[in-house]
Image 1 (cartoon, rainbow, N blue to C red):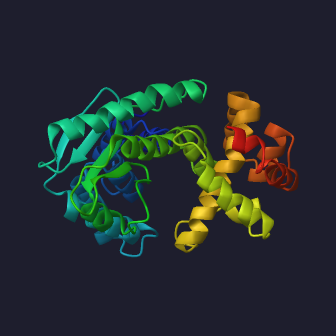
Image 2 (image 1 turned 135 degrees about the vertical axis):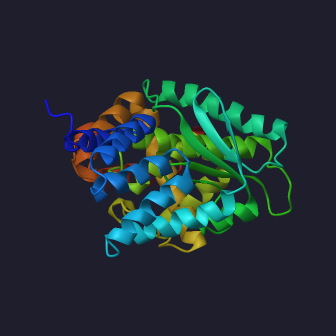
Length: 325
C-alpha cells in the first residue's frame, strides 16, 4: 500500500530475529534502513541481525553508528563491549559450513578435528530433533570453535565452563595444554549446548534455568553413580536447592561446588520427568512456557506436579529409580 513506509519492514525484521530467521531479518531491516536511515531502531536491529549471522564487524559498525546518534541508548554499550571483545579474538578466524551450521574457527585448527565438530553437531541435530518431538531450528545455526585461551577471552568465563550457548554455540576444541578434547567429551559438550538451541527455538528466554540445564544434561550425559552419591549426601544433609531458587541463571551466582550441585540436581529432576513422561511432558512444558505461564504454573499444567511435590519425588527416588537408570 505504501512502498515508502519502513515500519512494516522493521516489524517483520524484528519478528524474523525473534524466530532466528536471521538472513531474512537482515534483508528486511536493510530495506527499512534504506527507506528510513534516521530510524535508529532499524539500524540497531540490523546490527542485531548481522551479529546473529556471525558478522561481528558489521554489527559493531551498525551499533557504533547508533551510539553516535544516541549515546545514552539503553543496552547498546553492553552489546558493543561483548561484540568488540569477541571480534578481537575472532578477527582472523575462518568460516566453514555444514548442512545446518556455520562455523568460525582459528585457521590453524586441523581439518580433521574441525570435521569432528561438524559431524557431532549434525548428529545432534538429527538425534535431539527426534527426541524433542521434531524440533529443528532454522539454519544456519552459528558456532564458534576456539582453543581454551581464546574461549576464555571471548566469553570471560572460567575454565570450569566447558562450552556455552548465548545465541551462538561457543566451544573450545583444545584444552589449556593444547590437546584436542577426546571425542566423547566434545560430544557431551556439543549435545548439551545444542539442546539449548532447541529450547530457545521453542520457548525463547522464558525457560527456567533448572529445566533448561537439566534437559541439556539429560540429553547429553548419563547421571553417574558419583553424581548420585553427591546428590544423596546433599539430600541427607538438607542441602538440595529449592527449585524456585534455580529459576534464574546460576552461572555467576554460585561458587564452583554449589554450581556443580545445582547442575546435578537439575539433571536428576529433569531426568526423572523425562523418564516418566517423555516427549509428551517436554512438549507441554515448553509450550506452556512459551505461552507466558510461570515456571511453576507450566510444571503444574504439564506434569500435574508443583515444586513441592516434584522436590519430594526427587528426594524419594534418589536412592532407587535414578540409580537404576
